[in-house]
Length: 462
Ligand code: AMP
Ligand code: ZN
Image (spheres, rainbow, N blue to C red):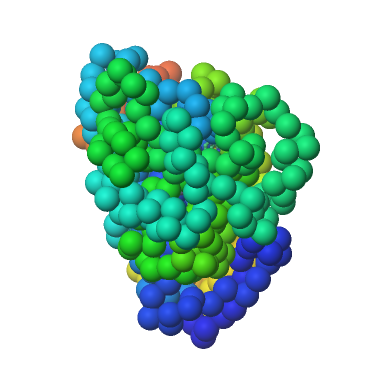
């Protein structure tokens, strides 16, 4: 494939822009990772899947991607306003385990579920608690440059020191002041100022706290991403991703920290995935309407059906989650897999389709269009199946639907199902149609469909 243009929507400039990596040898991408105080929901995973499609699209364009995702295991408070409890301490109280155990448990669960959804592994997966030193150093740098002030509960970033603070969110310091919500912290100079380092309240022993130049305490949530992304990717890397909610507070604060400490916007492109919704509201753990990958498996649905479902909506559009839509996605995926089993082994490829597929994904990750092109290819009787197989294999590197295991592979019928097929053969010979139907139903319960064709019985996966 010749080098094609990639266009991506950049929230910093509010338009689709031509994307080219600064360093032609390596494209640098950072994603805000999960807060590991609870099972990561499929809502969160929609955002991680969007990032996954981005990384895979860059790789499809022969870019070598260095992909970093963090694990937030300290400092993310229940409220965005720098108050309330640390989410990890909440998880610890809920489960009667230490905050460290909670973090370890849910990180392992996250990695397992990420694997089940076929997410490309990050090249680095740094934890906030492993980078306290880097975070302290960055706060010191900000302090040295005059961007901070210290009050009784911590060190804060003075957002009025930056002319363009909040540009990403489309909000100015004065706007927020004017709209003045009641501030819990009276000592803060401006509503938009945020904690860089929180000092542990006197007499209160926290599970996660460290010595610092400002006293024993813990880092603010935003500093971890700036400190770690800069450590692993350098001071102005290519793309930073996250969910839509991060555009309003977390990301503007990351940019402020980077502007203050390094004089850069941290990343050149800032991209946000729209929410997975339930009944037109956000799917969220705190609202109690969140589902997990385990819930999907418990309903006997392939986690990759969820991946397929997310492909059918553009990442900048809402996607309303229902079990019916997930089941429909599962049917479509099964149908696709069944069809490609009968194809010949991959050879050559369908150049025209490959060109169209590349232009779809390169147009700000237009996955719904890419999926439509896949089905058009599948149904195109004028193409040889060996050529279709070759193209689909290429597309699979972006789709990640596990199709490699199905293309031109005969269905292996399990022994118990084969037994039913054999018994049904006997029933058919003796014209015992009732028994034949019963055996067919039996097979259906095991997830296999038996059809009668002129060549005899044909078994397909449901
Ligand atoms: P958290 O674990 O809360 O730090 O969130 C991890 C990621 O999931 C962040 O990028 C959030 O913006 C994103 N996120 C949270 N809820 C949803 C949702 N319902 N749909 C899509 N992304 C979400
Ligand atoms: Zn972050």
